[in-house]
Image 1 (tube, rainbow, N blue to C red):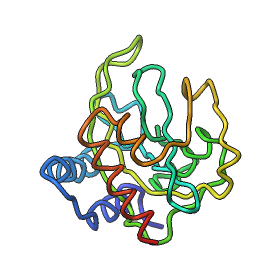
Image 2: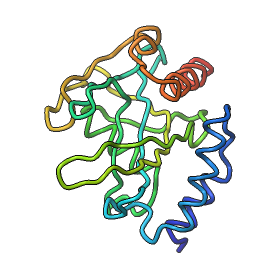
Image 3: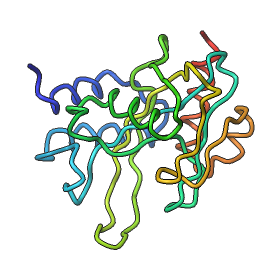
Image 4: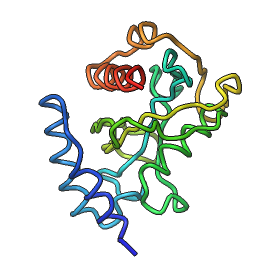
Length: 189
């Protein structure tokens, strides 16, 4: 069996970044994949890997955005790895997408895996110091988009949006980059 950090390194090594920030983030993530004792554990105070998903409807015309209560931002579904994910970032992204949308989801058949990578800083809260999320991002399809439901434990709101509406809510360049990549892949097939 392949060790999770080895699988993670292999997944990242095949990713093709599209801008300078993503190139830098990818290089840092490859280093973190090697140096962190438990790269998927929240107990790694400096940084840990997370998984997220751009969720699209079957036609690729709408995208889910959720309002993250703690960060007060519109984002794609995503979050921390759990032990059951066994270090599989695709499994983390799919699980998070299911939990945060209520939809049955699957990986997009033709999108690159991962679609995007990003490192972002999470501010300090109660018992957690400021730390980095090493986010590995995938494009997924909601098989039953009508099932979209808001889970107040996960967010303060969730909506299907057009691509233009989602891009208008994207408040930083890496999120806009992710959405543009997702739109291109979703519409290509």
